[in-house]
Image (cartoon, rainbow, N blue to C red; front, side, top):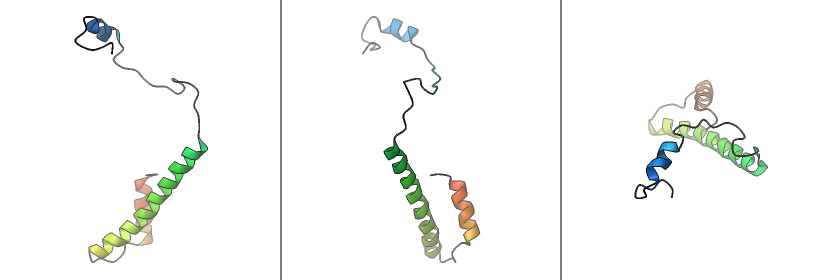
Length: 83
């Protein structure tokens, strides 16, 4: 709206607007936590981990190699992080 370049006041709006803003907690109001969203994200991360376990076994079969040892899979899942 205000910063359209075909309006004469656009240049002043662009000059007066802040170029960089650093977000901080609570900037847009109180922080809210939703149990439903938390559980949904947790379950999706868990499903991603389970899928990754299957990926290692399938890729070993596709490459005609033996399955990687459990210690290697644990290390790989740790490096993947929370997905």
